[in-house]
Image (tube, rainbow, N blue to C red; front, side, top):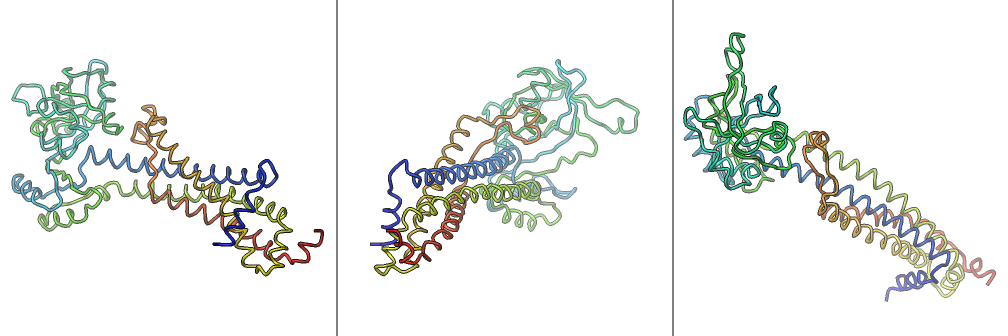
Length: 409
């Protein structure tokens, strides 16, 4: 039997409503509250980072390849599709444009994306969430309106629905020389998609890549290839293989394209962890009060233990374990409560953003997804702080002399 642990449990099992019980309850509650706040904050940052990555990966492929000007499309497609770790390959292109609709005759700025249908729906799965989109997004014949897939926010601003006619204005060489108006292309809405990624929902118009050359501005590059990976978290192997297979190509992965953003989020999460850990440290300070009261109430018992041969180390260990029991229970309770709060907030989507704020954060709602390693790090940090807090009064208890402890008994 561990004598120190047995004594710590007996010392803490005092009467409820006593000073020791009140102080211990306050210490437990303070540590639990601080730990829960830290878990929720880390869940917020982790959830936002994972949601942002999911939206980026769902609307853009993980790797972009820009081959040389003279590259043959069929050869490039075959080469890229044969690389290990590549799940899908599609050709794409981007261009700025102005969409004119019945609600906004003056036009709304949009990013026009040329999509390789149907293979492009595999590289951008959120755009292909509706199975019927592939059939409606076929390349139009000459004289037909070009089908377009709109983000839900952009469609709302244009006042457009499925089947609505639209007009797309894009730049041309004649416009650049000032001798002609912008090129106009007739569109028809083939579908409306909601991805939850504000940049797409509020500003993207997707058209078949086969019709892109009809209205593409002269400086638009249409020979961009998207690669969907089997394991999006490990693009290095695919990037190296693509560069070896196509030496003249420029190859970029999602980390290179969005690295600054995710690094900034990681720094922000680290700073937030440090700041909120100070709250847990302050709460752990209440454990000092709990152990001090315990030492004051158990002075006679300390004297008896010392008189029968218990060394200072055993006494100090007993009160450290008592403080760790109070603070550890608070850490455990706070961690469980924090995870439960995160699950509730995520399930109910309690934190939603209006369109103006969503454009800043790129997502329409904020999930709370605490990672297991973060919860373990929070628990370990809380227990360490509690142990340090309990060490000071435990040391004082170990220094009590038997005669002094028993003087008034």
